[in-house]
Image (tube, rainbow, N blue to C red; front, side, top):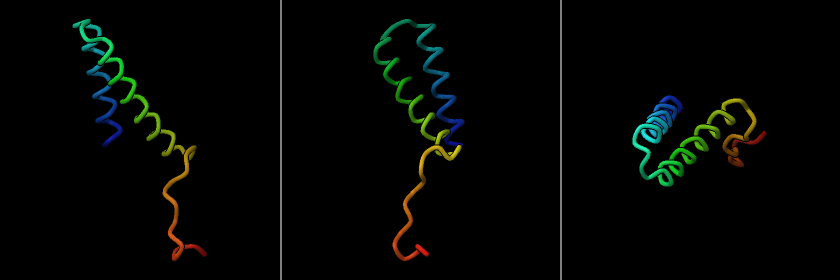
Length: 60
């Protein structure tokens, strides 16, 4: 759900950048932040990033 929300937000920002052509620096920064968060989520889901560390009581 979060992935879809981030993807939708990124698309909205990109459309606003194309249509309005104002505040491009701020919108580009926002688009970069959204794309980075989306990329990290996709990489973690793919197993390319480690998940949360296990606590000492659950190690075997």
